[in-house]
Image (cartoon, rainbow, N blue to C red; front, side, top):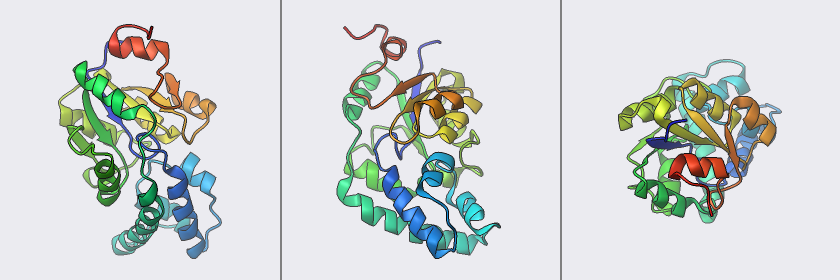
Length: 225
């Protein structure tokens, strides 16, 4: 592939390893709504969807906007209470972002996380100004696996989607990136290698401390020595 001009990152499970905390908050909400949904379903099947899309699954029907907003805020408050004391970047992330910047690769975030969740993670990690664009669910009509979030991020950077590389932890996110015309690297915090490969991930990595040699070459022109 051509050298990417931009790298577009998911947030949850990709910049930080926080999906277990989302899962815990979602399961508590599901039980309150009378659903027997499991944490695995949230992490493996529904990650990347907008909250209203998940509530439609849990309730068996589309919730009225006011109800969906109220339930979403309840769930996100619970998640932030669980995760706020533990916010930490994935190993190697900060150095990796610095290398991308030095190489002239532009940076964006494309996430279904609401604004307060984005501010929690990016603020605690000091990353608010590292990303030129941070696209959230309020800017698009569909969550992942639809390509809308990634397309909006690419448009915001002014870079053709085919010259963007996506980083994702969820199969839905990889499908979304591929649908947008982007190659994808799968981060193994939540999903299995098999699931990410089946979704279309070209590379797999556990964190950013050591990249696959061919990904290193694509981004920086040479394999690590």
